[in-house]
Length: 309
Length: 315
Image (cartoon, rainbow over all chains, first blue to last red; front, side):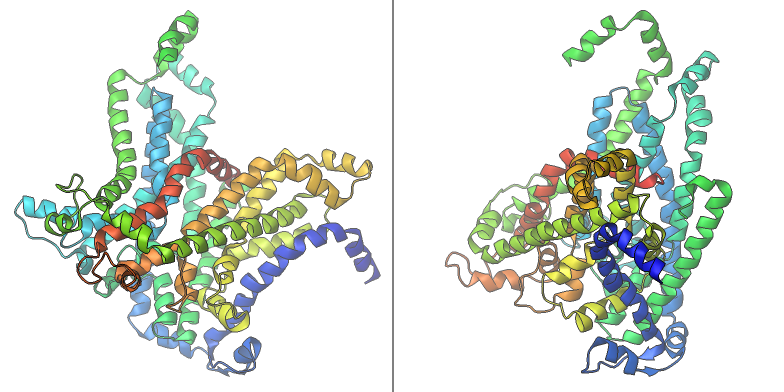
């Protein structure tokens, strides 16, 4: 014990520096983790404050989970979350690598910079702004798409109440917003490739396509694998704004836009069902944890240095 | 242009040849330029489009729909906003204060924590690293966080509910720690300590000044996060009379214009029901909320790229 105190005194300056951050983590990360016990309780607000509310609420065991998995919601939100994420991981990878290669091959480097800056813009804008952008195309009475439909004499579409189009809209906008950001990482990796590989290949008579195929892409492969596996670790999470804000929270679209995050939000704010929403959130966090640990284990097997821990 | 015209003559023959062999052919270059250029244009086009819509005459808009070149232009939306805009200005002020206070708080929390983790001599390094990084693996989720904010801290409907949830993240700590480790060698700090500087002195007068690029990166990540945040307002702002931050205001008027028509009664010039340029005002507000970012991001983009590449390198 005395040795421990000595250690604290010895490190007092650095301990003081981590103190503010530690307080933040305790309140905003660890206290909510303790709050997940609410998933096993019937939450009642007690006048004696937060801890009293949490502790005095009745235990109900796995009732909240039973209730969650009895409804068809659990299946729909899990399916939507996973399918959208899988599609985005694949399409996002292909488009990000593709644009990174294209950008790196452009002869005029200044134009490449200009394009890159343009591509980066959507990343810096919020989903609220992006949903206004989408509205200029999708608005039933004023939007560009229905104007085009009128021009070609086809029926206009009530975009915000037709679920069948939304998987494509969500994937398109989601990928579109992220390409600039995602291709930067690959572009940095391509710029970092030793030029002598290409010189040697040129001497051996390799054409540009062969160079891309046999030098650039294989050298990007470790990065692709790592980023993909990390993305798989996050497959149970989704970008709330993309699924809530872009479809304008339209009830008709819930079958194809409801994901775990939006389900938890609506359960909390619209239905006030704290127990079940917490249970759904805990389900997401736990599966997410298992996925991240598995993903990291696989990364470790492939390349020790790239593992996060 | 002049530079590119002169360059080939200056480059020695050998080097020039090598460059020619390795480059794509002019035809492919044109094709690549078209593909990338079109995509880049698609990324900035919606913003230009929204600007044009905001400058459209309201009645023309109702007749013709959204159009890139309307038959009648009007600046009514902007003059309305600037005349009726007292609440809008307040909203702008809320966003600005949240962004400034939040970013300063983030920088304080992140730099102090990350510096301690970057010091090899810190004997509790393992414990505090774990404390931070575990939050990346597991989180209590939205609902317990909501209950902590409303039932424990009682901060709903205050700007702290918009600031505190975003003020620290394990990711920014990793980026900053890696930055400290790569730019500030341990020897520099050790020698400063031999010269009599304490840990604080070393941190404030040696480490922070040479880490300005890293601080800029984290600061920009954070400022952008605060400027664009609407989620915390959606969760924690539920009093209609409270002026929300800009992004949440935009979100609310998307559903109805009550917020703006309430103000219209103070204006003699506009008939609240008929003359209010609803759609164009919405779009004008989108333009005003986006303009600061569009103006600034080409300049700070490079810090973002730096942060991304540092963040993906394991330290």
